[in-house]
Length: 152
Image (tube, rainbow, N blue to C red; front, side, top):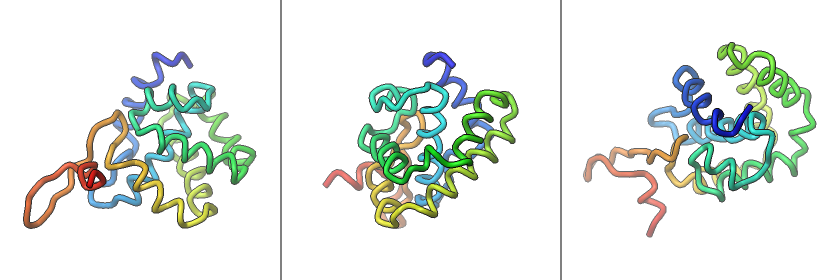
């Protein structure tokens, strides 16, 4: 898939699939890892710069997701091969693509060192797919941008 068409494709796909789970930062981070992996497959690249432009996530988050994928050998798994096949052959079947992506991410998330789960939340820095900031509702102060919590 051409790089210029990947972001619009992902926007359409994540209009149907979950890229953000309101009130659940670990689930949002889990889904955000999936965005990076799917973008890498569609763009056929592991370039942090290109994937950062496509996804809108901070470069450190994108690099972390790719590095853990490589270190853990996840890119050699059957689930990852299934995701590549689904992205190539079933890109118009969002349900199949979403199910296959979730299988990869569940395997990826369950097998990685738990410290990475927390690190990914920090590295994501309160940004959502497309570079949109995540809003956080503070009972006393009202709505805030989540990424402002990391800038102290």
